[in-house]
Image (cartoon, rainbow, N blue to C red; front, side, top):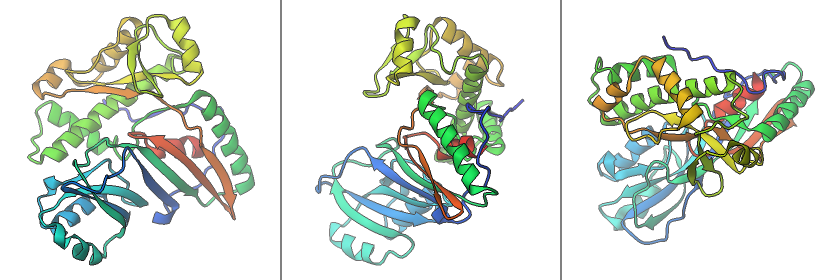
Length: 338
Protein backbone atom coordinates (compact mmCIF):
# COMPACT_ATOMS: atom_id res chain seq x y z
CA UNK A 1 0.00 0.00 0.00
CA UNK A 2 1.37 3.40 -0.98
CA UNK A 3 1.39 6.00 1.80
CA UNK A 4 2.40 9.49 0.66
CA UNK A 5 1.65 11.26 3.97
CA UNK A 6 4.51 13.23 5.51
CA UNK A 7 4.72 14.75 9.00
CA UNK A 8 5.79 18.31 9.77
CA UNK A 9 8.98 18.70 11.76
CA UNK A 10 7.49 21.90 13.26
CA UNK A 11 4.00 20.45 13.78
CA UNK A 12 3.51 22.41 16.99
CA UNK A 13 3.79 25.74 15.12
CA UNK A 14 1.05 27.31 13.01
CA UNK A 15 1.80 27.92 9.34
CA UNK A 16 1.24 30.96 7.17
CA UNK A 17 -1.44 29.50 4.94
CA UNK A 18 -1.72 31.12 1.53
CA UNK A 19 -0.78 29.91 -1.93
CA UNK A 20 2.31 29.74 -4.17
CA UNK A 21 2.84 29.69 -7.95
CA UNK A 22 -0.02 32.02 -8.83
CA UNK A 23 2.30 33.19 -11.61
CA UNK A 24 5.71 31.84 -12.72
CA UNK A 25 7.31 35.01 -11.30
CA UNK A 26 6.21 33.90 -7.84
CA UNK A 27 8.65 30.99 -7.99
CA UNK A 28 12.16 32.08 -8.99
CA UNK A 29 15.04 29.59 -8.98
CA UNK A 30 18.68 29.99 -9.99
CA UNK A 31 21.35 27.31 -10.13
CA UNK A 32 24.49 27.62 -8.02
CA UNK A 33 27.20 26.23 -10.35
CA UNK A 34 29.81 23.70 -9.29
CA UNK A 35 32.38 25.23 -11.64
CA UNK A 36 32.68 27.85 -14.38
CA UNK A 37 33.43 27.16 -18.06
CA UNK A 38 37.03 28.00 -18.97
CA UNK A 39 36.40 29.37 -22.47
CA UNK A 40 37.81 26.52 -24.53
CA UNK A 41 36.73 23.02 -25.48
CA UNK A 42 34.01 21.46 -27.63
CA UNK A 43 31.05 21.80 -25.25
CA UNK A 44 29.16 25.09 -25.41
CA UNK A 45 27.82 26.12 -21.99
CA UNK A 46 24.73 28.28 -22.35
CA UNK A 47 23.06 29.88 -19.33
CA UNK A 48 19.37 30.58 -19.90
CA UNK A 49 16.29 31.82 -18.05
CA UNK A 50 13.14 29.92 -18.92
CA UNK A 51 9.48 30.50 -18.12
CA UNK A 52 6.72 27.86 -18.35
CA UNK A 53 9.13 25.33 -19.86
CA UNK A 54 10.49 22.12 -18.37
CA UNK A 55 14.21 21.41 -18.44
CA UNK A 56 13.49 18.64 -20.93
CA UNK A 57 11.57 21.11 -23.13
CA UNK A 58 14.65 23.34 -23.33
CA UNK A 59 16.90 20.34 -23.95
CA UNK A 60 14.77 19.32 -26.94
CA UNK A 61 14.65 22.88 -28.30
CA UNK A 62 18.44 23.25 -28.06
CA UNK A 63 18.95 19.92 -29.83
CA UNK A 64 16.76 21.11 -32.68
CA UNK A 65 18.34 24.58 -32.87
CA UNK A 66 21.89 23.23 -33.01
CA UNK A 67 20.94 20.18 -35.09
CA UNK A 68 22.47 17.69 -32.65
CA UNK A 69 21.25 14.57 -30.86
CA UNK A 70 19.43 15.21 -27.58
CA UNK A 71 22.12 13.00 -26.00
CA UNK A 72 24.61 15.79 -26.72
CA UNK A 73 22.70 18.29 -24.57
CA UNK A 74 23.67 18.19 -20.90
CA UNK A 75 22.23 19.82 -17.79
CA UNK A 76 22.95 19.68 -14.05
CA UNK A 77 19.42 19.31 -12.69
CA UNK A 78 15.70 19.50 -13.43
CA UNK A 79 13.85 22.76 -12.79
CA UNK A 80 10.13 23.35 -12.24
CA UNK A 81 8.07 24.17 -15.32
CA UNK A 82 5.80 26.70 -13.58
CA UNK A 83 8.59 29.04 -12.52
CA UNK A 84 11.17 31.52 -13.71
CA UNK A 85 14.26 29.31 -13.70
CA UNK A 86 17.87 30.12 -14.56
CA UNK A 87 20.11 27.17 -15.37
CA UNK A 88 23.01 26.13 -17.60
CA UNK A 89 23.03 23.59 -20.44
CA UNK A 90 25.97 22.16 -22.38
CA UNK A 91 25.87 21.46 -26.13
CA UNK A 92 28.36 19.37 -28.09
CA UNK A 93 28.22 21.62 -31.17
CA UNK A 94 28.98 20.55 -34.73
CA UNK A 95 30.04 23.97 -36.00
CA UNK A 96 31.47 26.64 -33.70
CA UNK A 97 31.21 29.29 -36.41
CA UNK A 98 27.40 29.11 -36.36
CA UNK A 99 27.01 29.53 -32.58
CA UNK A 100 26.55 33.32 -32.48
CA UNK A 101 23.96 33.30 -35.26
CA UNK A 102 21.93 30.48 -33.72
CA UNK A 103 21.88 32.11 -30.28
CA UNK A 104 20.89 35.49 -31.71
CA UNK A 105 17.73 33.88 -33.12
CA UNK A 106 16.58 32.19 -29.90
CA UNK A 107 13.17 33.48 -28.82
CA UNK A 108 11.68 30.81 -26.51
CA UNK A 109 13.90 31.70 -23.55
CA UNK A 110 16.45 34.32 -22.53
CA UNK A 111 20.15 33.64 -23.06
CA UNK A 112 22.23 35.22 -20.27
CA UNK A 113 25.70 34.11 -21.38
CA UNK A 114 27.52 31.35 -23.30
CA UNK A 115 31.07 30.03 -23.16
CA UNK A 116 32.95 26.88 -24.18
CA UNK A 117 34.20 24.19 -21.79
CA UNK A 118 36.03 20.86 -21.96
CA UNK A 119 33.36 18.48 -20.63
CA UNK A 120 29.64 17.80 -20.86
CA UNK A 121 27.44 19.15 -18.07
CA UNK A 122 25.94 16.18 -16.22
CA UNK A 123 23.31 15.57 -13.56
CA UNK A 124 24.71 16.65 -10.19
CA UNK A 125 27.23 19.16 -11.60
CA UNK A 126 25.91 21.93 -9.34
CA UNK A 127 26.23 22.99 -5.72
CA UNK A 128 22.56 23.77 -5.28
CA UNK A 129 19.87 26.32 -6.08
CA UNK A 130 18.75 29.74 -4.85
CA UNK A 131 15.03 30.41 -4.47
CA UNK A 132 12.80 33.47 -4.11
CA UNK A 133 9.19 32.39 -3.55
CA UNK A 134 6.10 34.56 -3.10
CA UNK A 135 3.29 33.35 -0.82
CA UNK A 136 0.02 35.05 -1.78
CA UNK A 137 -3.65 35.11 -0.68
CA UNK A 138 -2.84 35.43 3.01
CA UNK A 139 -5.78 36.05 5.39
CA UNK A 140 -3.65 37.99 7.90
CA UNK A 141 -0.24 38.89 6.40
CA UNK A 142 1.22 40.37 9.62
CA UNK A 143 0.33 37.30 11.69
CA UNK A 144 1.40 34.99 8.89
CA UNK A 145 4.85 36.59 8.91
CA UNK A 146 5.11 36.05 12.68
CA UNK A 147 4.27 32.38 12.14
CA UNK A 148 6.87 32.12 9.38
CA UNK A 149 9.56 33.67 11.57
CA UNK A 150 8.88 31.15 14.38
CA UNK A 151 9.09 28.22 11.97
CA UNK A 152 12.26 29.58 10.37
CA UNK A 153 13.88 29.93 13.81
CA UNK A 154 13.09 26.29 14.61
CA UNK A 155 14.31 25.05 11.23
CA UNK A 156 17.61 26.89 11.63
CA UNK A 157 18.00 25.12 14.96
CA UNK A 158 17.15 21.51 14.03
CA UNK A 159 17.20 21.44 10.23
CA UNK A 160 14.61 20.04 7.84
CA UNK A 161 13.98 16.44 6.72
CA UNK A 162 15.25 16.08 3.17
CA UNK A 163 11.99 14.70 1.77
CA UNK A 164 11.47 14.28 -1.95
CA UNK A 165 8.81 16.72 -3.15
CA UNK A 166 5.43 15.77 -4.58
CA UNK A 167 6.51 16.76 -8.09
CA UNK A 168 8.76 13.67 -7.93
CA UNK A 169 7.04 11.44 -5.38
CA UNK A 170 3.35 11.41 -6.30
CA UNK A 171 0.90 8.54 -6.64
CA UNK A 172 1.19 8.15 -10.42
CA UNK A 173 5.01 8.23 -10.50
CA UNK A 174 5.36 5.90 -7.51
CA UNK A 175 2.89 3.34 -8.88
CA UNK A 176 4.60 3.31 -12.28
CA UNK A 177 8.05 3.05 -10.69
CA UNK A 178 6.87 0.11 -8.59
CA UNK A 179 5.41 -1.61 -11.65
CA UNK A 180 8.71 -1.25 -13.54
CA UNK A 181 10.71 -2.66 -10.62
CA UNK A 182 8.31 -5.62 -10.31
CA UNK A 183 8.53 -6.27 -14.05
CA UNK A 184 4.84 -5.49 -14.65
CA UNK A 185 5.48 -2.40 -16.79
CA UNK A 186 7.88 -2.04 -19.70
CA UNK A 187 9.15 1.44 -20.64
CA UNK A 188 11.24 1.81 -23.79
CA UNK A 189 12.38 5.37 -23.04
CA UNK A 190 15.51 4.86 -20.94
CA UNK A 191 15.37 8.33 -19.38
CA UNK A 192 11.73 7.91 -18.34
CA UNK A 193 12.31 4.39 -17.02
CA UNK A 194 15.22 5.56 -14.87
CA UNK A 195 13.23 8.57 -13.67
CA UNK A 196 10.18 6.53 -12.63
CA UNK A 197 12.36 4.00 -10.80
CA UNK A 198 13.99 6.90 -8.96
CA UNK A 199 10.51 8.10 -7.96
CA UNK A 200 9.86 4.82 -6.17
CA UNK A 201 13.31 4.94 -4.60
CA UNK A 202 12.46 8.47 -3.44
CA UNK A 203 9.19 7.20 -2.00
CA UNK A 204 11.05 4.63 0.14
CA UNK A 205 13.52 7.32 1.16
CA UNK A 206 10.59 9.44 2.37
CA UNK A 207 9.17 6.45 4.32
CA UNK A 208 12.56 6.05 6.00
CA UNK A 209 12.55 9.70 7.08
CA UNK A 210 8.98 9.34 8.38
CA UNK A 211 10.09 6.34 10.48
CA UNK A 212 13.04 8.34 11.71
CA UNK A 213 10.78 11.17 12.86
CA UNK A 214 8.14 8.88 14.37
CA UNK A 215 10.75 7.04 16.45
CA UNK A 216 12.26 10.31 17.72
CA UNK A 217 15.48 9.81 15.80
CA UNK A 218 15.51 12.82 13.49
CA UNK A 219 17.32 14.92 16.10
CA UNK A 220 19.45 11.96 17.19
CA UNK A 221 22.05 9.80 15.55
CA UNK A 222 21.79 6.01 15.68
CA UNK A 223 24.63 3.57 16.12
CA UNK A 224 25.62 2.37 12.66
CA UNK A 225 24.34 5.44 10.82
CA UNK A 226 26.21 6.38 7.65
CA UNK A 227 26.93 10.03 8.41
CA UNK A 228 27.96 12.73 5.97
CA UNK A 229 30.09 15.82 6.60
CA UNK A 230 28.46 19.03 5.41
CA UNK A 231 31.74 20.75 4.53
CA UNK A 232 33.56 18.03 2.59
CA UNK A 233 30.87 15.48 1.75
CA UNK A 234 32.93 12.72 3.39
CA UNK A 235 30.96 9.77 4.77
CA UNK A 236 31.63 7.40 7.65
CA UNK A 237 29.96 4.88 9.98
CA UNK A 238 28.81 6.23 13.36
CA UNK A 239 30.34 3.99 16.01
CA UNK A 240 30.63 6.43 18.93
CA UNK A 241 27.12 7.91 19.10
CA UNK A 242 27.80 10.23 22.03
CA UNK A 243 30.83 11.77 20.34
CA UNK A 244 29.20 12.20 16.93
CA UNK A 245 25.90 13.50 18.41
CA UNK A 246 27.71 16.68 19.44
CA UNK A 247 28.88 17.18 15.86
CA UNK A 248 25.32 16.55 14.65
CA UNK A 249 23.95 19.22 17.01
CA UNK A 250 26.70 21.61 15.89
CA UNK A 251 25.57 21.18 12.26
CA UNK A 252 28.84 19.53 11.22
CA UNK A 253 27.36 16.21 10.08
CA UNK A 254 24.04 14.56 9.21
CA UNK A 255 22.75 11.01 9.02
CA UNK A 256 22.03 9.80 5.49
CA UNK A 257 18.97 8.03 4.10
CA UNK A 258 19.00 4.82 2.07
CA UNK A 259 18.22 5.13 -1.62
CA UNK A 260 17.81 1.39 -1.95
CA UNK A 261 19.81 -0.51 -4.54
CA UNK A 262 22.38 -3.26 -4.93
CA UNK A 263 25.41 -0.98 -4.55
CA UNK A 264 24.10 1.14 -1.68
CA UNK A 265 26.37 1.54 1.35
CA UNK A 266 24.36 -0.25 4.04
CA UNK A 267 24.08 1.07 7.58
CA UNK A 268 24.95 -1.07 10.58
CA UNK A 269 23.51 -1.95 14.02
CA UNK A 270 20.42 0.05 15.07
CA UNK A 271 20.46 2.12 11.90
CA UNK A 272 20.38 -0.99 9.71
CA UNK A 273 17.38 -2.31 11.65
CA UNK A 274 15.44 0.82 10.65
CA UNK A 275 16.56 0.54 7.02
CA UNK A 276 15.53 -3.11 6.90
CA UNK A 277 12.16 -2.35 8.45
CA UNK A 278 11.30 0.16 5.69
CA UNK A 279 12.09 -2.14 2.76
CA UNK A 280 10.52 -5.17 4.49
CA UNK A 281 7.27 -3.22 4.83
CA UNK A 282 7.39 -2.12 1.17
CA UNK A 283 6.13 -3.88 -1.97
CA UNK A 284 9.62 -4.74 -3.23
CA UNK A 285 12.61 -6.79 -2.17
CA UNK A 286 16.34 -6.57 -2.75
CA UNK A 287 15.85 -9.39 -5.27
CA UNK A 288 13.60 -7.11 -7.33
CA UNK A 289 16.26 -4.38 -7.26
CA UNK A 290 18.92 -6.87 -8.31
CA UNK A 291 16.84 -8.08 -11.27
CA UNK A 292 16.48 -4.51 -12.52
CA UNK A 293 20.17 -3.74 -11.78
CA UNK A 294 19.21 -0.72 -9.67
CA UNK A 295 22.41 0.56 -8.07
CA UNK A 296 21.20 2.76 -5.21
CA UNK A 297 23.08 5.35 -3.19
CA UNK A 298 22.69 7.42 -0.01
CA UNK A 299 20.99 10.79 0.42
CA UNK A 300 21.54 13.54 2.97
CA UNK A 301 18.89 13.08 5.66
CA UNK A 302 18.83 16.58 7.13
CA UNK A 303 19.22 19.82 5.21
CA UNK A 304 20.39 23.06 6.82
CA UNK A 305 19.07 26.39 5.55
CA UNK A 306 21.11 29.13 7.25
CA UNK A 307 20.02 31.84 4.80
CA UNK A 308 16.28 31.08 5.10
CA UNK A 309 14.40 34.38 5.49
CA UNK A 310 10.90 35.82 5.13
CA UNK A 311 9.64 39.37 4.69
CA UNK A 312 6.43 41.17 3.82
CA UNK A 313 5.91 42.71 0.39
CA UNK A 314 2.56 44.51 0.47
CA UNK A 315 0.19 41.66 1.43
CA UNK A 316 2.49 38.83 0.32
CA UNK A 317 5.35 37.05 2.06
CA UNK A 318 8.64 36.71 0.16
CA UNK A 319 10.63 33.65 1.26
CA UNK A 320 14.26 33.39 0.15
CA UNK A 321 16.73 30.55 0.72
CA UNK A 322 19.38 28.31 -0.82
CA UNK A 323 19.31 24.52 -0.94
CA UNK A 324 21.92 21.88 -1.74
CA UNK A 325 21.47 19.88 -4.93
CA UNK A 326 18.69 17.32 -4.78
CA UNK A 327 16.66 19.15 -2.13
CA UNK A 328 13.15 20.40 -2.93
CA UNK A 329 11.99 23.97 -2.35
CA UNK A 330 8.40 22.75 -2.08
CA UNK A 331 9.34 20.85 1.10
CA UNK A 332 10.55 24.10 2.66
CA UNK A 333 7.37 25.94 1.63
CA UNK A 334 5.19 23.06 2.81
CA UNK A 335 6.70 23.33 6.29
CA UNK A 336 6.26 27.08 6.45
CA UNK A 337 2.75 27.24 5.00
CA UNK A 338 1.33 24.06 6.59
